[in-house]
Amino acid sequence: MSGQEEIENYSERVASLLRDKGIRLFSRLRFKYKGRVLEGILLPRPQYGDKDVLVVKLDNGYNIGVHIDEIHELTLVKHEGRRERAEERFKIRKGLPSVAVIGTGGTIASRVDYVTGAVYPSLSPKDIYDLVPELTELAELRTEELFNIFSEDMQPKYWELVARRVLSYFKEGVKGVIIAHGTDTMGYTSAALSFMLRGLPGPVVLVGAQRSSDRPSSDTALNMLSATIVSVNAPFGEVVVVMHGSTNDEYCLVHRGTKVRKCHTSRRDAFRSVNAFPIAVVTKEGMSMLVKEYNPRCDVDELRVEGGFDEKVALIKFYPNMDPGIIEYLVDKEYHGIVLEGTGLGHVRRELLRPLARAAKDGIAVVMTSQCLWGRVNLNVYRRGVELLKIGVIPGEDMLPETAYVKLMWVLARARDIDEVRKLMLTNIAYEIDRRSLYEYYPPVIDRKYLKKVLKRNRGKDVNKS
Image 1 (tube, helix red, strand yellow):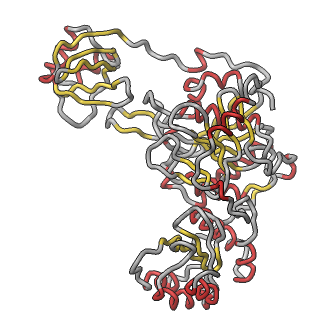
Image 2 (cartoon, helix red, strand yellow):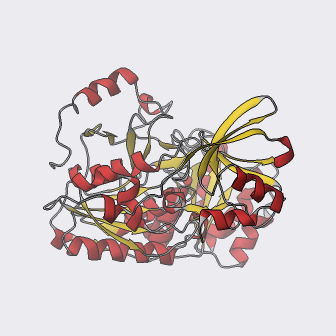
Image 3 (spheres, rainbow, N blue to C red):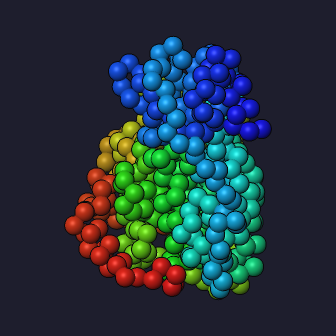
């Protein structure tokens, strides 16, 4: 359907006006609205709504609807040319390292559905070169859309599917694996993969976007470019999350999969390392490590997947006046594990002690974390903490509640004896536990002077060399 024909989806008087002005779908137009001069791209009309409302994408990335009666001095600026596909525009350099991209859905793999006007996760990873043409000089991408779901629909069986595909791609010789993932539950998936994937021969990089690729303010391009740079150049074989490190397009940060949390609903720099430093910083010029301790790339023969998750585990946030019946319910439902987000150092109200004691007596593993996030649980300071220890509650050290939840699921799939569960939960398996709580971890801001020094070392670096 041509742009001129799609204009017919508007009312007849709107379509007639647009035709008289020589304006068609996706033309750039200019008009006055309430005394202001606005300019943008004409979009198709959504299926629902007033047919007399013109839908225009402004240069700031936002779509607006303006009734035709409120538009004055409408003029055509120019006709926007149709974009060609990446394979028609770009030639990928030969001999580049191979990087696998596994699509699972999310904003980073989204496009606008002009039938409803909403953004849906339906853009194939095959369009990545078109979005980030710099990648044609950096890596040969092998893309696969494993599934296409919103991140809130993730579940353990999908984590295992991803892990198995990661193993397959490394066995086929790729340098690294990128997982395009929705941001909302990315921390859960990165933690799950961190526990499952052992002996990695390269990085597994989860990457997402806070803003879709159709918006000028999108973080998609830099995030994907940075994820690829990490996949090719990183000296480590670990699961990491790569996302914007600031609100502009200056750099991205590399966070450990067990230490990362989404801390803002919409900012581009929403992700933070909690109780740890980011392990690297990435610019368009290359990457620099920020820590000295990491798991180096292993021989591919060492790679294995230790899958399996016990789904009878609950994650509960404590709150004042919390009903003890909630714990009783989980015990009655024969749950195998409970992770609590307690207050401060790891506390709950007195009325919860009895049902927690019952849970421990029934062999249910109870792990205490803190809803403060930064800092660590210490049940030896106050009487309530000591009471919890006597009951058998396992202190979660400085683990994020989400990480402790995923780890307990993973541990309970391997052990049910409570002493063995305790031992595994207190064992540092994938850098989820830092034995030292450094003063510098909080607040979670990298010193800019130090960062500039690190970035300076990147200048002149060939990002195509590992």
